[in-house]
Image (cartoon, rainbow, N blue to C red):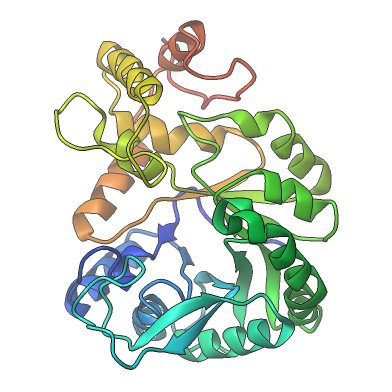
Length: 336
């Protein structure tokens, strides 16, 4: 599987109207500008706006990418059920979408096959490059985890393997927010990729213990989603406004850790967001970082942060202060 993702990819949840409505023209503008800037990897899902993100991405790429050079990933594991009485002007499951659906978890064989076909239609593609199973694991399902895992391994995963074997998709993997389920799946299944959101970041390096070595041994690559840990690594903690970590309010220990990282950012003249985007890419199994991008301003910021020079001394200072794991590879920065 030879897929060149590029260091920076496009997380397309926001163009599915995550938390707020975005006009079609604005969503199209950010996709167009991402393409013009050289981004070639786009990640979406049926859940993102109940098909809206896939529709917008598919319509844009049909025009600007007629030769199908973009790498597109989408997800299975949630089916879209019609909703007859919902107020489509209000947020549903986090999305303010005009699409008259809501999503329900379903990891069965038939649901995965139907989901793939529906996504293919919305994305206007004969085939889809990458198919991730969406939010399998205890983080999403709690006490229902074992039943959901059986449903997936006995049904949905069989469908994904079949799609890969027949060439309908080029690669299969997981799209999750936790590490434990990744290791559980790797013990039972042959996957190519893991889209891991928020778990190997400037704030968190626990996957160095076992998941990342296991991926290296198995030849599984990581796509790193959520590099800002729900925003706290994008805005910092010293501005006085609300901050979010892991989809909620940050504990005091996390706030203190970010504050200390910001002090080193000030010392070396490094934007916090630049450090957050660039850090994960130093690990050899991390193929790309995909922040959520919903506006042209977000896009320009991410591109600038990715290009921001970061002195080697900054990473050494973070290690010396115990702010990153001493085992973590760091980017090859400028001379201190």
